[in-house]
Structures are given as C-alpha cells and as structure tokens.
Amino acid sequence: MSVTGLEQTADELRAAFDASFAVAIPPEQRRGEDVLLVRARDLALALRRRETLGIVRCPRVTTVPSARARPALLGIVGVRGTLTVLYDLAALADGRARAARAGWLAICGADRSIGLFFDTLEGHARLAAEAAREGPPPTEDVVHVDGHARSLISVPRIIEDIRGSAGRTPHEE
Image (tube, rainbow, N blue to C red):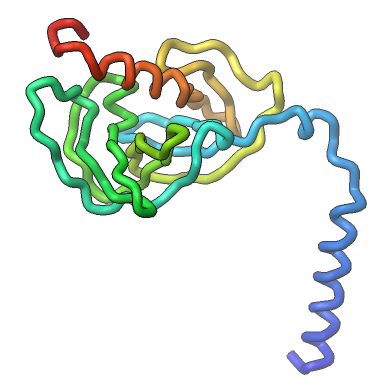
C-alpha cells in the first residue's frame, strides 16, 4: 500500500471513529449492564463490571495455613502493592476446593483486599436491563449471552459472606 493509500485509510478510520459519537445509543443499551464473561473450572459465569476494581493475571499464590480456612481460600497474593486474600470463585459457587494454577483474578472490595480466582477471561458483554432471571446464592441471576446461560455472580454477596464467616469456626459454617 502506498503512502497515499495509508493516508486515505487513516482518514476513513478517523471519520468513522468521529461519526460513531454522533450516533444515538439505543435506549435498551443505555439501561444495560456491562459484565465480564469468565470461566471458573467448568462453570460459565458473569461478573458485573461495576462490582470489580480490576482484572489481572494471577500472580504467585502464597498459601496460608489455618485450622479455620474455608475450602475456597487459596492464599494471599500481592496485587499493585496490596496484599490480597485470594478465593476460588468456582469453590465459592459449588463448595469443591482445588489448588490455584494459572489463571486470572478479579480484584474486589473497597480496599482491594479480596481477589476472586477464575481460569479464563472469555470476554465482555453488555446485557439488556431485563436480561436476567433470579438464581441461587451466590449467583444473583442467570443471564443469556449469545444463546448460552451463565450465572451472574453477586460480588457484594460473596464479600459479605467471606467477611461474615471470617469470625466463625469451621463447625459453625
């Protein structure tokens, strides 16, 4: 492609980008909800984008021995200069413990103190406001993205459960 051809392509891309701001967003998209599509073990899940502070590759996990540890507790990690307690999102959803391996974590909690581990970040979607149905805890709803059902995880509910159980013994849980 010649320089003139590159300049023309750049001009066309610039014009299309600028024109995209002049197009009205359909009302159903304005009321929608941004979600992150994740896979934790064999579970297809969705996290509300507004309920997370960020997504990062999971750094090395340091296990923490504790007689009162929950099955979902994987250990602690250092994320952006903060110690974060890491929980397995799949184990929180189904109660089956496992060891952490390569994957991702969603940073949660106002103080970045909680991380939710998952295996695969599959993408992002914008849901219509009425796209959810109520589901069992810790899921809040079941949503359909591209024809596939996913459990919509309630991050505040998980944080509340984690913090509420921190003072209980395993026999009380």
